[in-house]
Each structure stands twice: as structure tokens, then as C-alpha cells.
Amino acid sequence: MAGSQLRIASRRSQLAMVQTHWVRDELAKAHEGLEITIEAMATQGDKILDVALAKIGDKGLFTKELEAQMLVDRADIAVHSLKDLPTNLPEGLMLGCITEREDPADALVVHEKHKDKTLATLPEGAVVGTSSLRRLAQLRHHFPHLTFKDVRGNVITRLEKLDSGEFDCLILAAAGLGRLGLGDRIHELIDPSISLHAVGQGALGIECREGDEAVLEQIKVLEHLPTARRCLAERAFLRELEGGCQVPIGVNTRFDGDTLVLTGMVASLDGLRLIRDEVSGDQTNPEALGIELAHKLKEQGAGAILEEIFASVRPEA
Ligand code: DPM
Image (cartoon, rainbow, N blue to C red):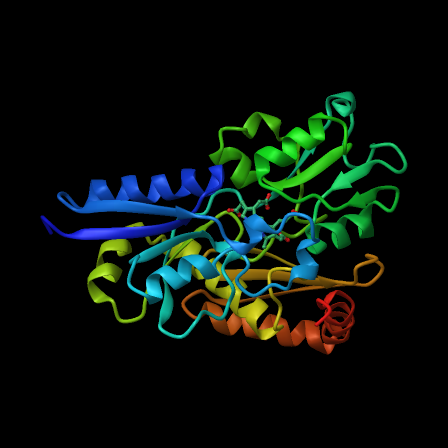
């Protein structure tokens, strides 16, 4: 492979760069002589910081600009947090590889003054910073004493806002904090019995051009089969519910021997209605499991909840 080249498109945030550098280093180790370049850029989601995430609309907020680079042949791959990658990709592009997942759980990060508290014992009215409807709905369901306030910006900016007193606590992905070397800010890992994580959380997705066999071959070394199976089940579940990344949909997956167990939930924004169920089956056909679970939740009213939410958060045309 000596002399060949690979161009990576990435977001510019600290977390994105840590992730992209990891991919670059792993590929460089695996392919001696491969010349790898990184083109870092801002996406719409990085630029619009004064509007609630759910109001912007959800199609490729953090991915579109990177995809454009591949479509015009200025990049060969794009590295994403898998949870930011829509389940339907633009024509001509594909999800080429899913890397080994870190702990997909959400984490509670508290202001110093609450260091003796837990989610359950935070004072009445304590302000939780999150712009995730998924986190909001599930935490409201279990902890009605908390209040919620939108927070935008990257992980570091959010922590600064917390420390300056704008919020009592934040909910952030444990994986993101860990990758940034900020694992010591994790105060409590949120148990899946309380809050299910986002589809694909904790894994990276590498997108590439469809049929680009040489590139697919190069990135294959980063594929982690158990993670890929879990995430393909999760993504099929989300796709079947026609959910984007800005809806209160959560999941959890685990292996029980050879069996893949997929738990999923859909909740109303007030947290009062929460539909949660589980399916299990053949891990070699993960997408069938995701579809089965989506149908199971729809039979219990998930479709109606999602319709209401789409109507309430849809950006004004
Ligand atoms: C998506 C959501 C959030 C990000 C929605 C959700 C969190 C937004 C917020 C789809 N993307 O999770 O329900 O809480 O205000 C994002 C993070 C990571 C990837 C940061 C985070 C890092 C972790 C990972 C933002 N995207 O969730 O704390 O790789 O999973």
C-alpha cells in the first residue's frame, strides 16, 4: 500500500479531533506507507449555537458538510460520533465501519456545591443542562423535582458554563468525557434502568463512498463486530421509528451468550408517558431485531407520542 493516500474529513471540535486523530493513528499503524491527511471544518450544528437542537431540524446537522467533501472527492472518509450520523445517508455514501464502543452510558456532572448529591438527592428545582430530549424526558419521568434548561456548545464550553454557575448539573455522554481526558468529572454513571442511551452512543462511525473498495478495505481494520451488531440493531430501531437524533428515543443492547438483547424506549416530553420494551434474538441479524422492537413499541402507542413531538418541535417553515 506504499504511496497511497487517504483524506479524512472531520469536525473541528476538541472531541471530534481527538476521535479523528485516534482513527488516523490506528490506520497509520495498520497500513505502513499510507499518507493520511485531515481536513477539519465546522458544521451547521457547530455554527448555530443559539437555537435549541430540536428546533433546528435533525437531518445531518453535524455531518452534512463532511459528506459534501466526500461527494466532491475532496475527502475519502469522514469520522463521526456514530450517534450524530443519521440512519439514512445521502445517496452514494455508506457507513463503512463501526469502531469499538466505549461505555455508552450517560453521566451526571455536578457543580462543585453539589458534590455530595446524586440525581435523586439534588435539591428541588435544581437546573439540569441538556438539549437532549431523550435525557430530558427520561429524567423528568424519574425525577420530577428537577428542572431542565437548554445548553449548547461543545463539551468543554458546557463544563465552563456549569462551573460558572449557570447550571446545577449537566448530563453528558461518559464516552465523550473519557476521550477528552475528563473522566474525573463523571460524578455518577446513569443506570440504564433510569435512562437509556442514544442510538450509537460511544462508538465512532466511519462514512465513505459506496463501492470505494480500496477505502473500505483500509478502514475494515477498525471494525469491531460486537459493537457493529449492537449499533446496527439500534440504528434499525431508530430508522423504523423514523426518529432522527433529536427525539426522545433511547436504547440499550447487550449480549446474552449468542443472543443479542435490545431494549428501547420512547417517551413524551413531559416524561409522563414512557413506553419501554425489550426483544432478543439472533445476533447475526441485528437489523431484524431493531425493526421488531420498533413495531412492538408502536403497538403500545409510541407512534402517537412521536407524532405529537414532531408537530411541537418542527422548525417553523
Ligand atoms: C446527539 C445528542 C447529543 C449529541 C442527543 C442525545 C447530546 C445533546 C445534549 C444526537 N448528539 O444524546 O440524546 O445533551 O445537549 C454528542 C456528544 C457526543 C456525540 C456529546 C454528549 C459524544 C459521545 C459519543 C452530542 N455527540 O452526548 O455528551 O460519542 O457518543
